[in-house]
Length: 416
Image (cartoon, rainbow, N blue to C red):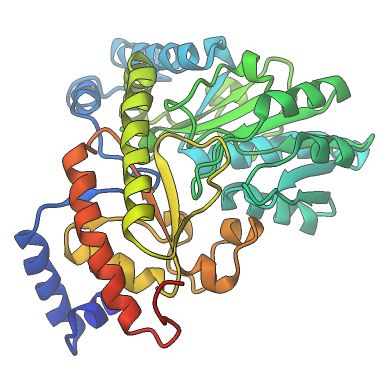
């Protein structure tokens, strides 16, 4: 799919020619990465921490000999590092392969453990597919699921959660921060409601962990998912916080690893990388949030000022300092994304996990955007590599690209 899009953008008749052309184009321009919500580059300090566990400390962490126990020490140190950022006990963490597995383990594990009482689940319409698709599978298994609408600002109303509760509700699962529009949900308020009702509360914290405070006791959550590759760690490593006493049915079967909650030989280098990335994120979280937040504001203000008929989605909500979702009326996001890519700027037209689909983002539809508006939206997500020069270069380039694309659109008649 990507090659065919690139061929159209390059104006070349064959995919091979387009690939060569794009490589030449990309070598000719500096690259600026504005897609940190999709994934982040591995921090050199994280890589340095991981390498010994590939080269020298290669034992199986379940083995009793010295090689294995050296690997086990790395795993348990990482467990403590992640636990410190969550404000929880290290023993309450389950290491997984990433956010999707953590979400699946939380949703399937808790609901299936409550199967005997005809469980009911509450979630929102803007969740990541790792949660939404899990809930849809539960529906196929006979579980009743309530999908809450969100306000136009992309926020779930705590009152809506409270109104949806039933005596048989087994789980409420609401993400902490949207990967697409960056909105932060009122997790503390929802957590207070679920605690009072005696209902388990799972939070997908993949986008929030390492960027905003995520103390699980302060938030009032029972389960919390996170992933290494969103915080400059490796892909293929994640974790799930499970509050002590929560009943969790396994979704995989094998050995008794991770206190018999997740079987399989531990990915020791990946886990070490996750622990190091968590530690680094916590050490400068507040300062980095302020720095990136200023750059995000600079980007948003510059776009809205210089590009007519541009709009910031969910502008009034409390949002991640890293994320801007901006709509450009009368321009489809696909050619805009490709035009920016050819000039060296990597952005997203939605979640990378659902790219390649012709359907508009379910998140943008849920906040009230029309199909055309949703397909005219780009997501800019900033991170450690982002600086003011990159933002200003993007701002200098973007108005001209939008103007050229609008000139080709029959719907564009100029700014109102």
